[in-house]
Image: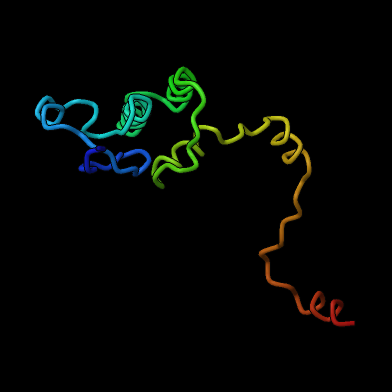
Length: 119
């Protein structure tokens, strides 16, 4: 008979069971339902606390295998969306800068300019 859930995974929100011994030892099971989710949590916390960069977090996550983050809690989803966000192409930025944008004049119009616009 399965034991009644007494903990909730910090990463995915899934209820799971943790025994009293694991609680006393402060095992990884106190915060996550699986070792993979525990590792994800550790990487996230290191990034959040600015101990690692986003690039380092991405590399570390790549060592965990395929991760389906669609059922993660909102904070972890946002983290994964940031990790897997497409990198902007620098050549697009150069193209945008090459096209000069017309600036509006901040000078007040003279009476002659006002009349010529109305005609």
